[in-house]
Length: 259
Image 1 (cartoon, one colour):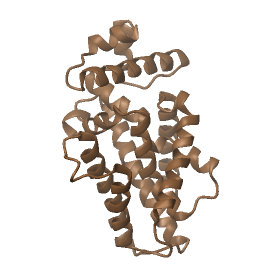
Image 2 (cartoon, one colour; image 1 turned 120 degrees about the horizontal axis):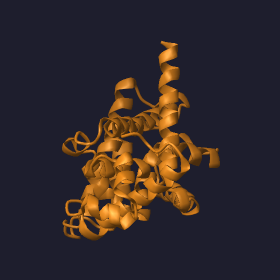
Image 3 (cartoon, one colour; image 1 turned 60 degrees about the vertical axis):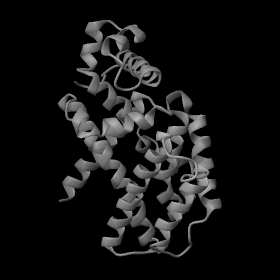
Image 4 (cartoon, one colour; image 1 turned 90 degrees about the vertical axis):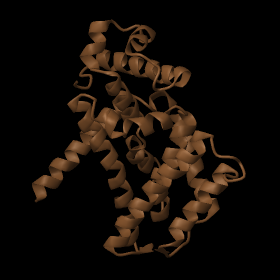
């Protein structure tokens, strides 16, 4: 199913996805039904099925419009003096803040990236989520490469890829552990400090010229929090998702033309 092509369809799509997220929060991601989304959003059946093919499409699109990579470029334009280490922290901090402003996103994220879900979405939505997930990895990799180029980090190509993996694995494990609320407090102490400590252990494994500190961790976190607070009106909009997809396609075409 294609993304909305005009303002009216964009507005309808956002209403449908708003309704989906409310139902996921109230009933869980297993229980909600497409018929409920249609009723909750006030959308006609025919209009709905022009935009979405299935429940899996809804889950994938809720992931896409909340994706943290939708915001990196705007944030860097608004904060031009970020250090190399600040930029490497961005995917981490944006993920934390996305969950703060949209707590339901963690369960949507976990389910959407499961092959048993995204593979059942329409081919167009499946391709979009593949692009967006890989874009997130590409951003992390680029930020680490830039740190090496700026001589803020000493690392070879293998270590750059390893650290890219480490940050992504760290995010998945830390967020799943805290968001599940199953693990007793004796194993998971105060969330912010615990997550910093394990991130610090990961970063200390590599040769940063200036080590990561808790004050830097908190400072970037506050900047991202303020950014999200200022942009609440379109923080998780289809418009942002579409702009990011256009940028992704443009970058790919540019790369291919250089080959």
